[in-house]
Each structure stands twice: as structure tokens, then as C-alpha cells.
Image (cartoon, rainbow, N blue to C red; front, side, top):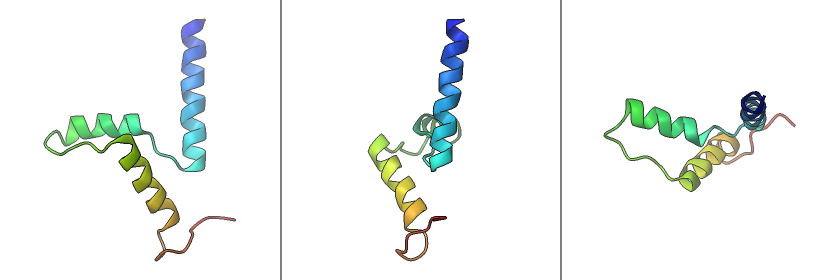
Length: 67
């Protein structure tokens, strides 16, 4: 029962993160270590800042969002 609850909370966190456009740092680290072991892994702060820039500064500095 406890494991099922933990899984549900993890899926909920992932869903909400994807809903608001924040990619998973943990998945990024897994991907980099598995597929690009020769390249440095960004810190959590660097990763988050780059994700925010990609989301909000995509159109020449203009905010890109649906509302």
C-alpha cells in the first residue's frame, strides 16, 4: 500500500511539472549519464534557468505563453 502511494505521488509530481512546463532534472541527469557520459552535467540551477529561458524567451525576448 505504501509503495502504491509513493508511486501515485511521484506520478502526480511529474504530471504537474509537465503541466506547467518544468522538465525533470532527474530524467535529464539519467539521460546525460546514459547517452552522453563524456559531457558535463549541468547543475540543477543551470538546468532550471535554461528551461525557463527556452520557455519564456523563445521569440526574441518576447514572452511566449498561451494566455
